[in-house]
Structure formats: C-alpha cells, structure tokens
Length: 316
Image (cartoon, rainbow, N blue to C red; front, side, top):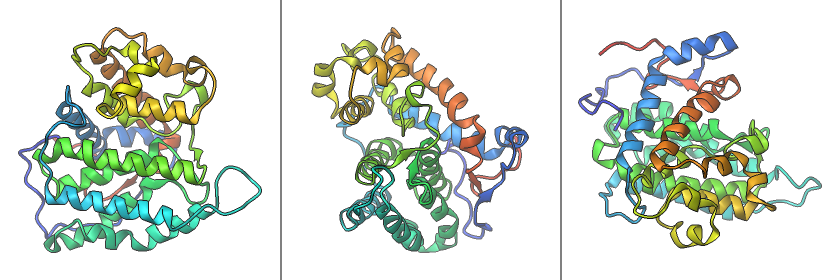
C-alpha cells in the first residue's frame, strides 16, 4: 500500500534508525521536496485516495489482524483520555492534563507499537514508534495541527513499508484506522481544549485536519445525488455523515464553531461552489501540497529515518 506494490517488504536485517529532523532552514525545503520520504509520503496519500474512491465508510472491506491491532492501540489512547480528566486551571485553552496524557504515550509508545509489529520485525519498533508519538499534538504548546496528522500518515506508511500493512488493507487503513484516529484526536482537541497549530484561522481549510477532506471528497466522487453544494446543507450532512468522512468533518466543525458557516469556514464555503467532487478532490490535493507539505513551519518538525529517508529519490 506504499505506492509501488511490487516492492518487497525490506528484510529484517535492515538497519533501522531513530528518525530525526533534517529540515532546519527554509532553503532545506528543496531537500525535502526531492527526498525519497516526500515521494513515498505523497504516493501513499494518493494510493489511499484512489482506494477509497466512490466507497462509503459502511462498505464491506477486509479487516486484517494488523488493522484490528491498530484499532486496539487507538482504543487504548482513547481510554487514557478517560483516565486523565482535565484539571481546573485559569486559562480556558491548553489544559495541562494533556501533558499527563502525553507522558503516558511517550513512555508506552514502543510497547504499543510492538503489539502491532511481529517479533521478527521488532528492530523496526523504535523507528516506527517515533511517528506515533509525533502524531497526537505537541505537549509543550498543547496544540495540534496538520503536521501531527502527517506524522500519523507517515506512521501508517512505515507500517506498509515493513510489510505489517499490505496492499489489500488500503480501504481499512482509511476507513477503520485513520477514522478511529480522527475520533481520538477530536476527543483530545475537545477534552483538553487544544490550540490549533499554525492555523490560518478563517483562511485555512480547518483548524486541525486536512487528509479526511482529501479522502472524504474522493469517497463522494460520482455520487448519484450528493454534490459539493450539499455539504453546507445541514439536512444533507445529518443524513449522510456516517457514510462519508468529509461530512463527518463538517459536522464536527459546526459543533465546535458558532456563527454563519461562510464566516468561520470561508475556504470550505468557497469549495462548496465547485461543481464536482473530482474537481474538489484535485483542488484539495494541490492545496495540501501548497499549504501543508511545502510550508516550512509544518515540515521543519518532520522526522526522517531509514523508512522515510531524506536522501534524494532513487529512480527504481
């Protein structure tokens, strides 16, 4: 499920390394765009985009043991939120109980990842676990944004690269794992009143997420009656959100924000005027590259290891 499906899973003898930051200054961005990591990351996003095209969340798809274990891992993170209630504090935003929750993940991340990765690939666990730790927000600033979301996609991409997830897991990666991840992130954002990281306010697509809008618009391509104009219609959203990730995102925004949709979510309002879902999907992919993957404040935090390497693309 990592772009090229003919690629064999790397041998267990591969030298795994702890991923680290490589993009330190704006001129380093060129290194990122030419890197194997960038090619593999975007390839992964687009492969999944194709995989979910025209399919509902309620579609019957294969659920492998690895997928079940990833959902169980996310359920654990969810349970820890319940066990770590917000504390009383003067400031409304950035509840410090988040740091307690995060410390638990920081401590347990490798053990959690080890439940998903078979023993013969145990050497990969420390490398892969870094992406999980990076995917849930920042414990200093108590914020969350698209860079954290990208780390979770990178985590899943790494699991594909070591062969834990396979090509036929594609739909379940988005519908089961990523969707569960989104639920847990929304709960974190709500419970601890997390700040949006590097949000562009009303000019951004959404305070926290981007990928579910891409994959969610792909789900709606060639839908018999739902058009982009319908997602600003409350009735259409209420009746269809359980089937479509895009509408689930819209529902969450309307729960969290007050006032006219056109004001609090101007970009999305503009998108609702686009005639077809395939145009929306193509536009969002372009926007994701420009607004997230090509922005230094987002990418400076991205970490590179043996699975998502900084070296330039090697032509296969």
